[in-house]
Amino acid sequence: MKMEPVPNPPDNVRHDVRMDGVFFRRAFVQGPFAKALDPGNYSYCVAVRAGRLRLETDFPAPFAAELGPGDAIAVSGLVSHVFRSPEAPSPLVAGHFETRAMGEAGPPADVDLVIGVAPSESLALGSLLVGPIVVSAREHRDLSRRLWKAIEMLEDEYADASQIDRNLVVRRLAEIMMVNISRRLFADRRGPRGASAAPASRHVILAIDAFLRAPERAWTLAELARVAGMSRTRFVEEFKRVTGQSPGRIVSRMRLTAVAHRLARERLSIEAAADEAGYSSSAAFVRAFQRAFGETPARWRRRQVVPPGGPRRVRAAAALTEEVSVR
Image (cartoon, rainbow, N blue to C red; front, side, top):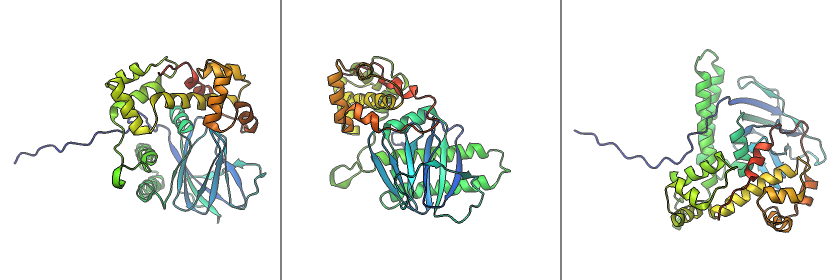
């Protein structure tokens, strides 16, 4: 009998992002506490084994998430943040997590965490632009179950130091975790009658990747459509179907996010920020910024607190603010 190959569905996951250098640690924290992850070009995944805590961040807009057992959150090391225990007072100064090896037992603690660290500038920048991603054990059961299965396998790998290919397995399991966290972005998008929305086509993802790889280029809508192998009309329709917004609006948001990141860390004038974000006047820039973040650039900058020893390569985010023309 001749076996016909079963056609695979379109593969829409980005396979070009490797989790080289990724590692995992445990943290046992006694309350009350306020802790922060080390700042820099890191992409973090924090999974809660036991206890409750709250993540707070102001970038690119005020955001807070209550986390409990089974929950996980992805966050960028390029953004100022704090993890607080429920009883911790707001003025409490944030320290740093003291971590242990994955197989090392910890003392009795209010909160037990597994912390994944990916030292990748591209992943850190991507996490910065997307913002924190929460995988809730209650609301996203399938994704949470897959994450914890991967974590259990990670613990098995870390428990057996004799495996010569342990780092390879850890990296592969981290990539599986990243894929499931990325799927969270589409978990709430539903089609008619509750059906899952169709995933983004590989063609659209190729165009988005092209922009992120060369943000300094003066991209036009026609060029992005050409990278996607589509007509301009079809590209815009497909892009809006996937993201809910037009390509120009998404690029504008990326510009504003990157400029906001620079405003918090550099002596950048509003005029220079407007020019880097591609606006013809400071007034137009201020209006766009206020629509995106709910307040003026000056007021937003006054609220920001740069963590001690802040990100060393923040200009990576600034690259997205170069002139990008999508009309």
